[in-house]
Amino acid sequence: MPTRHVAFIVLIASLTIGCSPSEPADYDLVIRGGTVFDGSGAPGVVADVGIRGDRIVAVGDVNGNAVRTINARDLYVTPGFIDMHSHSETFRLLNGGQGRGVIT
Image 1: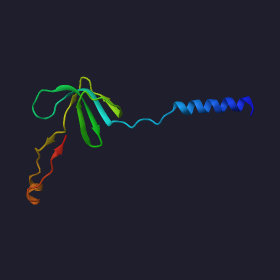
Image 2: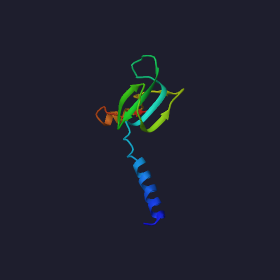
Image 3: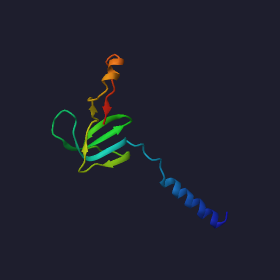
Image 4: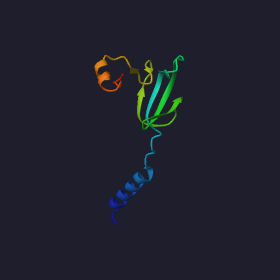
């Protein structure tokens, strides 16, 4: 076998041996270093929030890798808010008292 072919095979083999499949991410999203308010009325604390799918799965010092990371330093991290104030009286009267809320 020509020397050139052997060198090429050795190069490909060495590159392949060094490659391993990437490890799956621990989280889909990690929000790092924000002031977290949990909605209980307690003061906010600086923490990370780890999210997998549509669930918060870790709060605190979140270790591990994520598909996406957001740096929230100097920002607030809060649950969603629902504004129940609305001017849909007619809609409510015509729909058995049911009405739309506004999620902000």
